[in-house]
Amino acid sequence: MGPPVQLATWNVNSVRARARHVARFLEERRPDLLVLQELKCEAEGFPALEFRGLGYHAELVGQKSYNGVAVLSREPVTVRQRRLPRLREGAAEARYLEFTAAGITFINIYAPNGNSGGDAGFVAKIAFLASLAERAEALLNEDTPLAIAGDFNVAPEEIDAPPGALSPTDALVRPESRAGFRRLLWLGLTDAVRALQPSGPAYTFWDYQGAAFDRDVGLRIDHVLLSPTLAEQLVTVEICRAERAAEQPSDHVPVMVSLA
Image 1 (tube, rainbow, N blue to C red):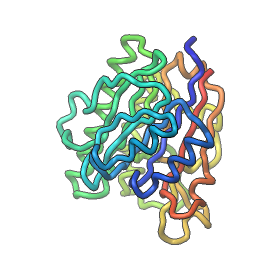
Image 2 (image 1 turned 45 degrees about the vertical axis):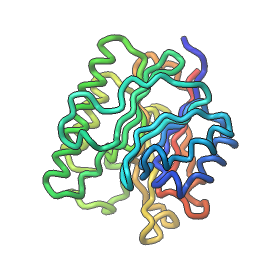
Image 3 (image 1 turned 30 degrees about the vertical axis):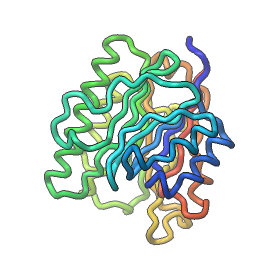
């Protein structure tokens, strides 16, 4: 058993636009690790000094105007990979960061949405999920304590999207997307949210359009998956829904897990 760890994941939809939201979250919640997605900036534009003033180190993979993933950590982490191994489709995009901390390997992902770019965009999404499963399997075969967190852009089950909210052809709910997510579970990973809240909506995203948040028309597409040893240490899961009601919020909210 390692030390207790609090991990949060948050698609911030532009870290520069949401820097004050992230800073407030760090001050109020003090997670050990906060992984961020959709930074929409390169490394030189990332507000690392602001977060450093709050006691957080930053490691990131940035990309101009699009994508981007980062980790903010109370203690320095060791980066292992900044690209998803064996991925060919979309390999140049900033969607993957793998690092170790507290004896655990963490993978932060921002999976392709799959609805843009036509057929090629969807192929890239499925290729990403397949390569992620290959990487997870390799790590699990080494008995590595593993947590995969981020924006998967998959609503895994019917309960994870309101009836009729998405077309059956939407990439977030297409059978191939859901199969890619299930493959990760079949490797032995545990969906942290569903481990502690097995039924009912648990949305992490509400579109800016159509008063989606007010009407609670959301999606569950941000996930934390845990290897067996970490799943045994899972204590709490919180979807920080209040963040969506903030002024000029991200369309996603943090998902926070505590490991004993």
